[in-house]
Length: 242
Image 1 (cartoon, helix red, strand yellow):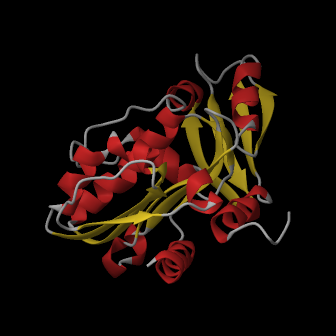
Image 2 (cartoon, rainbow, N blue to C red):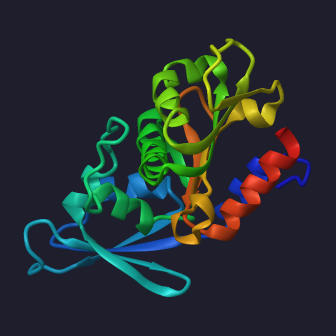
């Protein structure tokens, strides 16, 4: 991949080189599951076992070995995640949050806007619950930000959160206390959807989503809980656009 691609796009290219393996244990092969996860840089294989229950289960492995196990039905349901209102996350870890942890730093392909909104909301909700630190979000166009203005007004007015949004200057948002708007016309900001939370210096709370638009409704990208990757992203954004 060309080194002339801007930083945010190169980070997605780097993750594309990694692969996870799903081993599906079920009475019958599920070709639909294989096709859907082929778009996430996941290699799916089947082990036909008649005595694993009605739904079967999936073992997830990466280059370090075993990662987790999850039911096939649960996995399929999580491909169409809910987009919750801000602040309505239950105290316990949700199935979708466990799913995100399971596939962190794994490339996804052809994600739709609903999937990205659901993942973004998990990051926004973490920032809301901790009520401090930095939250940076790129909407490609500030016109796209308009639909999320009420959410980000809540975030900006919530305790000590430092909130920044980015996008092409196709719409002028109203002034909101605590919200910094970065109107940028370049392709990096225009092509990449991102949401990143710095965890208020807590490495265990750092997380980010990066997704590059490939088609009108399809995105390639990844989410991550790796603190070094999140730190690198914040340093780049603040150096380049701060």
